Image 1 (cartoon, rainbow, N blue to C red):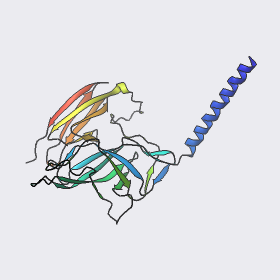
Image 2 (spheres, rainbow, N blue to C red):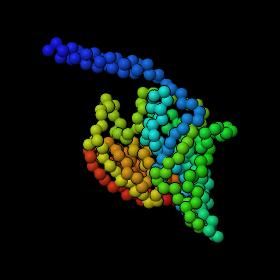
Image 3 (tube, rainbow, N blue to C red):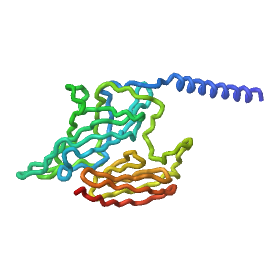
Length: 259
């Protein structure tokens, strides 16, 4: 009995020591952190790009593929959004000359809302903070247009030093705005919404937050939400939707061209 009591006491002291260590670590975590120049960020292309359909200045969307850590702290979590644009497009030509498409990654959004400018090269060149990033896939085949599929991985680098606030190290989840205290969102509270549009590559925003481009499947907390679908040159489409917990719906939107 004495041996058992000693073991229980020792276990309790071990747990207490771990709790003290965790509390001390949290207490010493800085309020802000500087992300240094040339920090690598691995990204995933979330749009499907094609030199036959893409146009110059089209928005290109990305997601952070891996957590970015500094001193053991996640400063940019996996799933954070990033944005860029198409810089140059060349359709396939005669004599077997294939298509060409060049795009940039303009910024990655940190959890505190800071837009962190990025570039294609590890070493900074010049003063331009918008550096075109050529596609890792150049020509798919003789006489064919270039296609960059969804899920393509690329590597970008932080352009300059950026200081961000810590405390919210998770990417934003669309939820109903409320003045009441926030409550935990469980998987059963999430609804799946399949969003398609005519034409494709329209931006999807829920409650003012960008979630991707069409066609996409977005995960949204149950409740009432303002959904906006918009694309340059077309009238914005906006509706209030009520989503049930664990539901799944399909939203097919036809956008009207601006005269």
